Length: 121
Figure 1: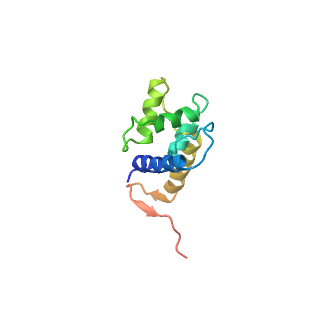
Figure 2: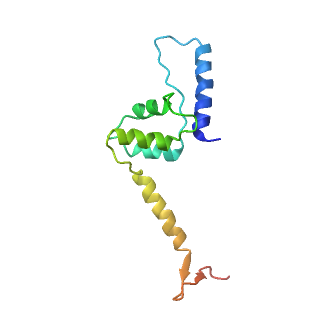
Figure 3: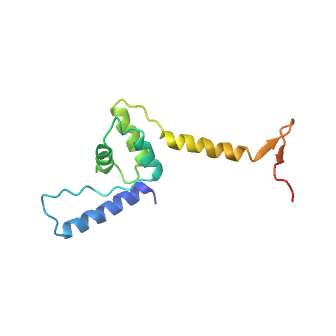
């Protein structure tokens, strides 16, 4: 199942439980929204330009199909506001560090053959 489908399914179950509970009518309970860490990091990069509640409200709209991904919805949301999507700076930096550490595990000779860098004990 995609997270978009699970998001909708859990949101409907959550709304049902809210209706069954005795919550003060003056208290507004927002719809339940599921995000991956990557989704959240993408939003974090834009919090100087957007409010998190606006992004979550857009994601919770009924007009989006159950299979709509957060990424697709968020890209459209940014586009309508004339904002270019950026990746979260911390994620970019950390991803680069991980890639560099992996690349350091390999050395190639002049012919391009990968040599094992492990020293036998």
